[in-house]
Length: 357
Image (cartoon, rainbow, N blue to C red; front, top):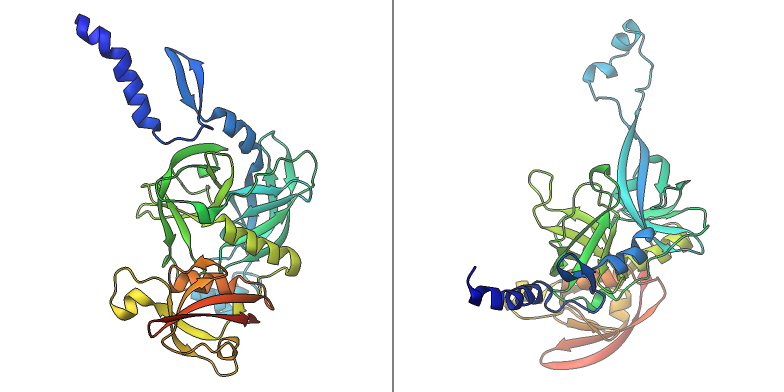
């Protein structure tokens, strides 16, 4: 090695590390390691990983749907029972403790759907029977409750403050291997269209998410819950760097309703809406365009009309029709909201009281 290379090698190493962690918050600490100080998330993860749990679910798998099973003579000849017998099926997922005092655990609806028995395993090895408090298919959120003894909860962060490029880590139970941590960035915000009838406003991330990560935590580098990992986009079923998480704010709103009512009661204004950009052919138009208003609805009482554009709700900008639909749908029935509305070049503020769907 030449004298010049030996001279600049430490500078190259420092420069490379700076590129790798550029913009990383102070929570990514430096500790002594082989060859000197190295960046690490270990101190933050030591605090938050006890709040992430493995979930084992025993559910019913229906017997194979063979037309012969519907023939009573066939069933009698082979001495089969009159009703098909469902076989137990074991599946695995993840969850996040968000209330250590009452033992509430957030996970996905699809993780616990049709569950006969739910078992939660903590990081310290304890195995606890869980009770299903409530589950909502539309947002893919479910709430479990476990005995509240010496639990660690993960605090909610402000998912509305996330920006594309923010660093995040995904914590979960991929392929039933046990608790696993992966890292990446926020790749996009406000993703929708993954299902036909869901309430979607996904955070997209390239942090590795695989089957079994569902219901686990997407965590910011300051150790707060940004979202609940929910789905991946993958032709072959494995990670390709496109994962989706339910924003923490949506998960929290759903959790509150599930705890109070056992279900989510959808809020309603009584309008049909569409994206301004799609409707008007504009690339940068925000807000949601009102296409129709139901007679006698809260929207009609507030004076909303077709052609109005809802641009702000309760001080927060509306990013499109899906965003407005999510926020109205998850607003508690009876709540009064304030809308900023644009129409014919002018802007006005109206108030409306959300009704039940």
